[in-house]
Image (tube, rainbow, N blue to C red; front, side, top):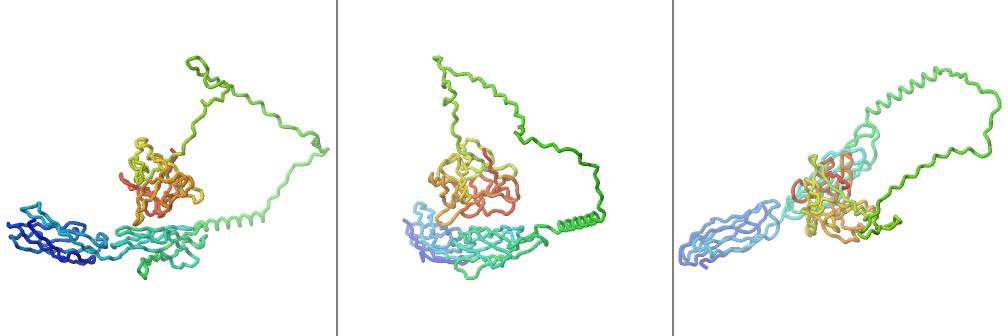
Length: 467
């Protein structure tokens, strides 16, 4: 080798938003003048640089270059040790290229952003909202939710009560807001509420404030009309009793003997005419080559039996753009981990009925398992990694007895609820695992679960129709 390299020091540390550096030494051990081109490789190359990036050395001479690292204070610079390398490429002898390896440890920082969506909700009995937690730091964070005491006027519950969010991702929780009493008359009431978001390791929570608007059951204009009608009724009754019309009749009872009904046998209703028996239709009998009749003469042969019907099949089609995309096991694959996606057109049996679904209903908890018709024995589930729960959907085979009894994991069970807006047959598919709704991404990749929109949403409202 015609060169010698060294990093001093070989390992260092740096905080996001700051900078740190190491020195690279290069010695020309050859017998000719050589030009060395320097470049960073590895994950740290995006926020590091080498200066100068070219060293021209005479035989036996040594040169140095400064390697500086400045990771941004964002989730792109993950906390922890990050290996890197400086590639040294000789111009005259490129086959003798070398990489000087080192390691830089990126410090951890935590930062989050929280939002209440929407800030104002409306409902006569109850309403829902969402709280979003964005992890802007470079390490996973865990947050928990709690509500202040709103007295008897309002109750606010978060589901789930805590979420874990990966760096650069967002976590969601559903807020169920319920009024303590019903407002029958009196216009609209406004109930302010406060949600506290507490990050693990931090004593002071972040507070989000919203407003629950509760309209009365009977609006003011209706009460005015009812009051007017009641006044008119009272006037009518007063006039009626003050001037009661006289009513006489010319009917007189006919004198004579009353005729008693016979106490013997009660008269019977006339019998209906006999119904005409349908004339049997003669069915030609089939014969084999020898002329014998097939199927027997008693009409009870096996030829009339039908095959037992299979499970009922459904298509699940969204409402976007007025055309609808079909939920499907992507590309008709049947192996575990196959993504559940969507397709704008009906593909029929092209992929083995991958757009048909079998719905298993478990009445104990009113949940469903969704089994693709092309991959019997598997169910649709939320993908969960060892680190955190994703928002991707895949299929996974399960035990036959568990599928029949409903003894499945929460990530494999769903609720079918009516979508907002009251449109007939418009449903939401809600995960028991994270209470998020199945969302049509409108691409050839996988569907996801996202926080349920409290308003009608063509991308997460589905039509479940028997095929």
